[in-house]
Amino acid sequence: MYIYYYNSPLGRITLASNGISLAGLWFDGQKYFESTIDGEKTQKYLPVFGQAEHWLDIYFSGKDPGFTPPLSMERATSFRKTVWEILLSIQFGHTMSYGEIADIIAKQRGTGSMSAQAVGGAIAHNPVSLIIPCHRVIGSDGSMTGYAGGTDKKIQLLELEKTGRFMENSIPGSK
Image 1 (cartoon, rainbow, N blue to C red):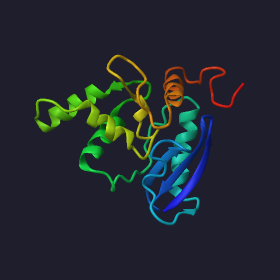
Image 2: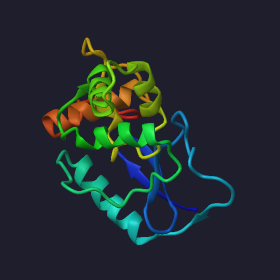
Image 3: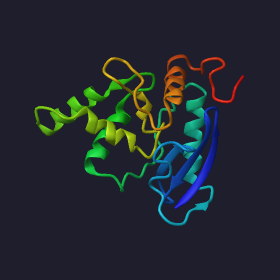
């Protein structure tokens, strides 16, 4: 497993790769940090890290990157993959609720209902945050519930997507 570090306006991000595709992207210290990394890791700059870095540069400039670097979801259950694929369909600047995602999955599976809590669990374990945009999922009442990177970062990311910039004086560590 290979790792690379990216310094974002919201703090350092650790990226992980199997050598071909992106297997992880976490704000340092977030919940489930480095959850897809087992055993030894080597710090090495790879082409996939270059693609992810380019994506992050565009994103943090307040624009939709318009592409997705190659992702590795091989260590996920089929349910988690389904949830993450729905997350990838949420457009830049838009949000969806846990319940809406549960309804989509219930329709896909031909079942009467799906648990929004189960969807929340799958979202919480998203190993490629930002690129698989779990920050775009909100409570059915519009509340900023659950984000492994912290609710403060979730608010900042949604504000960036809405306005193209961060809210003044609200970036951690800024004055």
